[in-house]
Image (cartoon, rainbow, N blue to C red; front, side):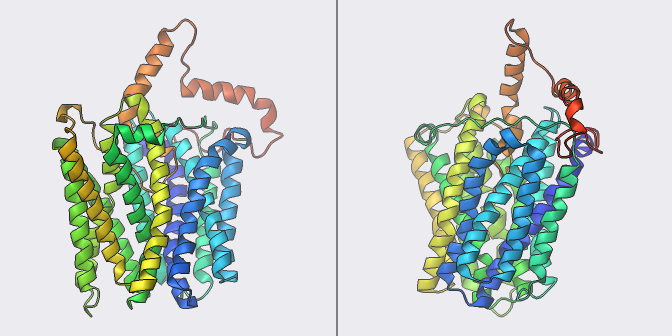
Amino acid sequence: MTEALRSCWPLLVGIGLMMLGNGLQGSLLGVRANIEGFPTAITGLIMSGYYVGFLFGSVVTPKILESVGHVRVFAALASLASTAALVHAVFPDPYIWVIFRIFTGFSFAGLYIVSESWLNDTATNETRGSILSIYMIITFGGMAGGQFLLNSSDPGGYQLFIVVSVLVSLALIPTALTASPMPSMEAPDKLGIRKLYKISPLGVVGVIIVGITQGAFFAMAAVYGGLIGLTVGQISFFISLSVIGGALMQLPIGKLSDIIDRRKVLMLTAAVTAVAAIAMYNVEGLSNKLWFMGFSVIFGGFCMPLYSLCLAHTNDHLEPNQMVAASSGLIFLNGVGAIIGPTAVSVLMSTFGPSVFFLFMAGACTSIFAFALYRMTVSRSVPLDDQGDFVAMPVRSGVVAVNMNPEAEEWDEEAEDQEASSAKSYHMSKASMSIMEEADGDDDEDDDPMHDGPTIWNRNG
């Protein structure tokens, strides 16, 4: 763990700042939309814009990186995200917000991809698992911490938008000055959706419904809180406690899924999430919000691990060399679900009132339970000895994060052994490539201040 931190702490600091800004902005827009009197359905459309941009950015950014370079891309996207945050404050108009929410999603998708590619490049087979764990902790911590920043100023003013802009801008500093060599960036392999469904119907259906559920929650929770009369402080606690619950329950639920049929754990987790959602529906009107806050921990604790459970279940049916391609497809499907979720729940809230918010969550999780139960009646479970280990994965991340999954190490090591023994090819370590890249770039570094070459931090931090 210490070695992993030494090798990539500047990147992790930058990611933490990004997550603080992103967590704050998402809730701030929901609260501010209520203050501005935007219709709930329009607010849902605004919040869905983030996921539209995120999905688009996940596809486009790897192609841009091939020709422009990581430092330039990160600087450009950080500037765009910082500017978009300020535009929301200057022009509180729903149509302008939709456009710039798309820009925000596009920017953060690219920022995650750049950061994750550097993290993946610094990782070894020995540190990959530790780095991914630290990344998960920072992701959850930043998202939860951003909610508390909502209390630092009046959401009806412009100060909090400035805070978001400053946090995203500050994230550029440690990332721009991070490890020397430019990471290699190859377009991720793809596995067709139809083929992916044949391999794991439950994994495919599960990630779509999880995307709908979690996309709706993160996009509309602040709006829902305001509509049922929660104060800004209560909204921040409600959302942050849900995120903290998700962070705390990832490991226990994952370990349980490693020792019994993972489909049963997926069913149990979805069922508890649905029950917690119904409980929150029943206690939302109580003047004492202690029960509401307590159930939010349970809801988040069981809702957040659903994504990783779906990925792990799918991986149980894959060869190691298929995992990255399959995960990229699942991320895409999860993103499609996340676009649908905020729009769907906002329309229901406009029609039937804000209380339908958690009934929607309960219905979505019940559908996961029902489909998992159906799949158990028509297919056999994977033998426990053939199940891979559960690996917690960040829900809202770039396509590169899946490369840090230790379950794919087997394929990496096999590929390296084959290359080493082949007369037509040879294996070169990252360190050797770094030396050659630096040697080849010596003549250019003095002329190009944005060259992705050696910086004030080396690989050892």
